[in-house]
Length: 204
Image (tube, rainbow, N blue to C red; front, side):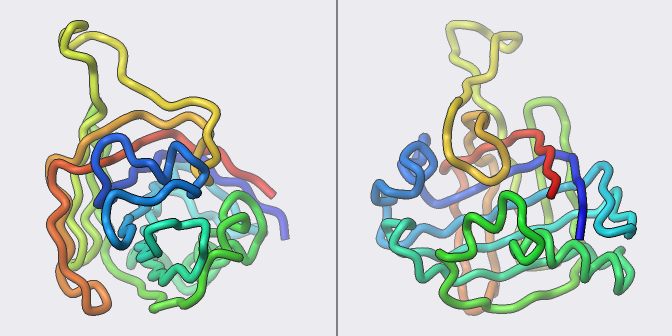
């Protein structure tokens, strides 16, 4: 199987800004007893073994131990309801790591798959703001941060040279809104907590 994808990414978790998990290759303990994080991807253009998956979105919810590197992650995968069966299967293979690529580096850390669902996913980028709504379960909006001394037109804060499946360079962001409701028995409000965004370009 050969495939390639490119698009945009956002992340929201329950850690304070900046998340110690992200900046330590998952080795440093999270700020809370569990690390709960949502990854969301919008595929601008993509082909998976001949299947066109362009203009679709995927979200992944992870509930991990405080030290994420310990493994035992509980993971739920959400695929855009606008996909047909072939597109949904293709995206699930890539984003679960079954098709290799960056997500495959995380599969040894997964202890339980909570579910794979097709739901409406609304993903939006608007300048420094990035938002995703995953069915009625997850609602997130983050904003890339700028040091106040630079003013609104200053450079966005960023992390470089990190281990992360989306990109080795991520923005530093803060959630404006980050809520979950009934996500495999979990509900939360992490508004004001850590976030990241980045473009991604993957292939295998």
